[in-house]
Amino acid sequence: MWVIIAIVLVLIWLFAGGDDKKQIASEIKNHWNVTNIHHIEVINDNKSVAFFKTVDGTEMEMYLEKSLFSWNKKRDYFFIPEGINEPIHLSFFDSPYSNEEEYNAILLRVFDKEIDSVQIVKGEDIIHNFKLLTKGSGERFGLFRTENDGIYDAEYIAYNSEGEII
Image 1 (tube, helix red, strand yellow):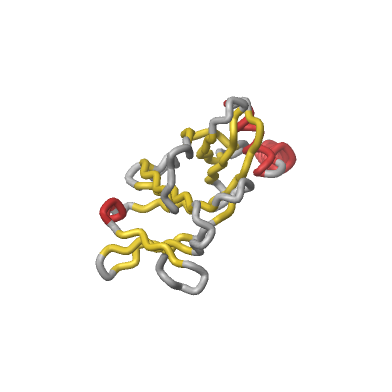
Image 2 (cartoon, rainbow, N blue to C red):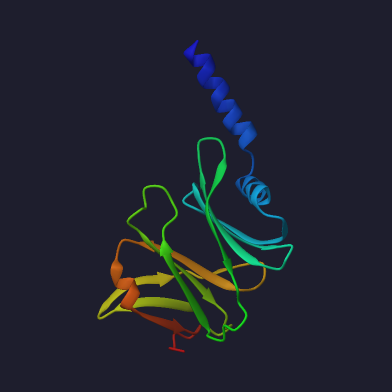
């Protein structure tokens, strides 16, 4: 009996689950009236961040986490790019994911096309090298989660493709 139940649950999970990005898009559309989903990034198979635009033109980001059978919204934010003229924009917040309550999170948005990578440095220590990802809109970003509070007073150094500081 238990074996049959286990097999049925596995089959439901495999067939009902489908493509993660399609499930994430569906979850976004359950919460927002969306005109365009710019990018969905799946992290470690069970965490995700998605960037999209609503019908009123608001740029949003949604953080999702996968349960046993589906993706669930954890938190969302809006972003207003008007008036930002810096090459890099940093957003600091508490990690929205389960079991990361002590983690700080940084979302790095890169608007300067010359910037190829960004490093977080505190004194002689390199805290993180950002792997920049590209959204459908062409904007590049990086997401980093850490327990290190040094990120708040660290230096954020941008480099071009030749490794020169910009």
